[in-house]
Image (cartoon, rainbow, N blue to C red; front, side, top):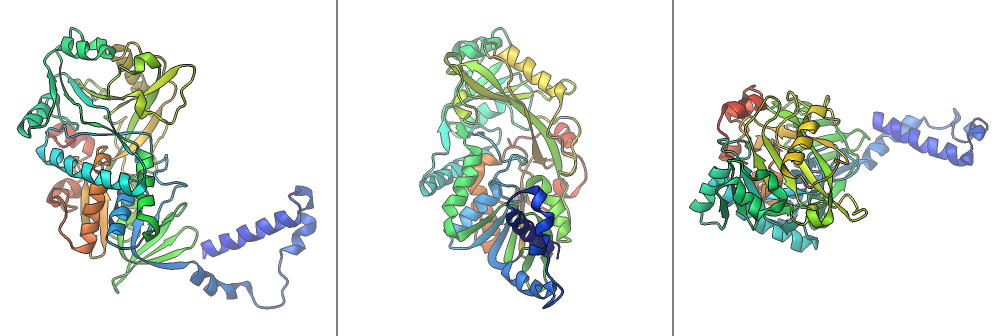
Length: 468
């Protein structure tokens, strides 16, 4: 009803502006042009036809236009299955969500053989996306893990990654001291004299994040109907086996299945459908761009630094090379590198209603200090961002059915992007009943980490996590 009234209001406001010649002083004198008289049929007679005109049917309704949503649409399209993808933002991977941006890391260098092998599968599927979309998305530029012996963290560890690379026979280089790291990477002169070690995977690199989401939607072609600015206000899993969604604009979509893939908004959508919610936290995670001379930028590696936690400093920092930054134009011979942290700003929150995109000045100061110490040739910070990470308490994703015709992907935990189209294949298998390409048991929606209420930020500190 509200959608219908908004539609009428939008049409009449447009007509009035046209009659008034876009002149505010002419609005009153032209009101009679758009106000109906009392003769004839009431306007409500058109309501039923309006509902029909704004209703559609699809095989799979996908809620969320980020990585998981677009990957699912891509995988379903390869099976000849249709989908409607609803994104509340004005673009796929909107800036308000977690899949937005220039770059995400990909690597086989893990402290977990399971995820290292999973990345190998995912790289094959990324190649399929690149071929079918005609878009280059992955750039091989190597990745260095370096720093202190912290033990296992949400991103693994230097020594843990080295062990897995050795066990799987994957090519890598090991640096036993901070001096060896500084010799190999002059931009990291701050390592000299430190009790550091490092391991490098030359075949790692970065993925063009926002472009990847668009590429997967493009590759899905006419099998996927992308609907932007489409916020769900109702989701009904009916007794007849259908799923019915209504958007804020009054559109009704009826589907055989639904995939909920909307990150920090997951529980809000589950509540709309009267389905059980999950133990998910949303972290505020910060990053920024720094100016650097182009000749210096060429020597800055893609790297992840590990140091011990200290108060609000979670100890995990990363840098992307200048080649991974496309959103800022080269200016006066300058390039730009992206530097960020992989720990939360303040306390985790339960949803997106109170998310603060401004972030914390204290954490920005930590990032500035890290740059000064580890990248002494890098210049000023030119911007800053705060992005939502949807976290489970064990840092494993959720990929599971929560009703006969509803599947959920959530809890990307800041590291799902690199698996991209492989996650779409997993979600598609939940709907089709086909065998999943990886073991989905660790990603169950009924596991203790998802059904208990311990905050993820606390539990990750309490447990050994080796999944990054």
